[in-house]
Image (tube, rainbow, N blue to C red):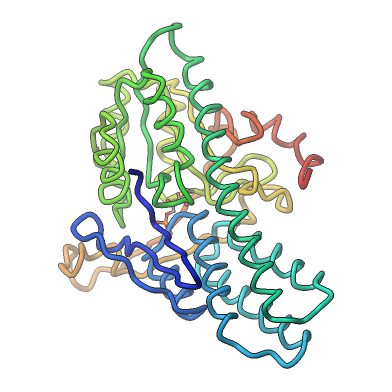
Length: 352
Ligand SMILES: CSC[C@H](O)[C@H](O)C(=O)COP(=O)(O)O
């Protein structure tokens, strides 16, 4: 059985508290928008697609217990709460896109009945969940094909991934980890290496957990071992996820992605970004326009509750970095695999 980070049934929303993994597998209830915002901000739920789904569901839960006197107040309330949820983590585009979609949905309703709104909301979020899984499967298959193009017809591949992009970060299957999954199902994966992903260790805590759970041959490395790995282990390709891709292909992803891309370029290893088409923000021409979230120092200075850094030292803790498009071989989406140059031409297909 694959891991499930979000459970929603009959108006009750629960999320797997990812801060406790891998030691404890514990679900916590999200009773409304305030809980949703906190869970996203504290990273109890994380990964761009999962954040959007939990944000929207937390609003759906809240709406059910509220009374609205007219459509205007309902609209204002929904818009205000969605914008509030977007503010919990600013870098990824998914929550913002989902919020815009739901706001225009509310505006298009001709009746202001609460029951109808909740029904329409839930239907649209359910469709979002299903679409995410279907898209991830398509990304997995397209990505596997792209990676296999770099080896002999029946050869095996060795890939490197960073951070967590699996079932825990999405509605299911995963993006970059979905590609790994598809390679494994096709019996073409020799090995996957995952980085620890300092400072918050999503790789060591979550990706490693998923890989062990799925019995996929995998090895954990420290972030500082990437160059040595590329020299020693003949890596076929790097595959990472994305939180936001600009129109020119510049990609915001977990901190550390950029340096892996630089090292991959040096070693001649293809570098792929795997993400749903909705992660591409055609409204911004380049990565310079992406807001990079900075996280509390404690996430760097401590492991759990134990301080590992010298007291008094100051810290800089950006959660994401931008990989320039010239370091990216291609962006794997459910609509196909595009070089950054080809991606620019896709702008006109948005929404179709
Ligand atoms: C699955 S999309 C890419 C991910 O959102 C991303 O790189 C990532 O894992 C973000 O990590 P987060 O733990 O939410 O800060």
